[in-house]
Length: 353
Image (cartoon, rainbow, N blue to C red; front, side, top):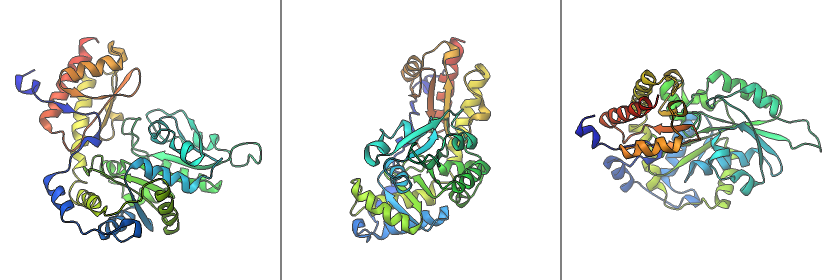
């Protein structure tokens, strides 16, 4: 490894680490603003209209976080005492601090998944829609695309369409956690509106690969978004001159959406390099977007020790389980940093193989 590469630090813990570019900062500084609680911020209104149109829904609501957008989505569909069904790696279960139960009295059940892949049969088998007074009723199925803890898995459009058809036939709604739906769109070329048509509500995030500092949106029908606005205020998410933040999202959608393909290519480059020295660590064909999950146990590592060793060599990652680690490509990781990450990860995985 050259001295030049050794000096490079690649922070691959998450794509939430992106920082606004100078041009994005200028767009934020010049944004026209108003009071969003009164529905009078013109930049927020423009962003909401833009995202609703992209996803083929009637309306949208700007939220400070993706977790809030998800929690508003499930609250619209699931009454207190009812349940949602999703997979056991889903963000709404693993990374939102039990919010559905704590804030909305919603319980949840999950089916086991491989790589976060949607299993419509399993979801339908788990759902209870005729339990009467004896079982908790399932009101909503949640699907995540791309799937974070699954390793950036892209859900097949046909499976999502099948899920919606079968869920609706049994009186259940579908919420799509689309925090990284932009990545699925760029990777597959599937129109965002086609994904949007598969769900009653969809959340999308602006502060991951798109590079905005803050913000997500929930989309759905106009009636549902009016209800969501009330619940957003109730959850503490009413905001004032937030057009400063919405302007970052508008800039990101215009200038930084297509470039997600660069993150995918760099991630795939490292996946192939790792697989060449240790095929048990990763299957490159299962790496769909910008997230690389490695199984490090076959190489003799614990996940915690591997992340520590990589960090000492300037590559930061994230532990997702006892045997698995995660690295995520984003706007602030360039070719040189990717090359450095590739050299470090392959060295570590070859050293104990």
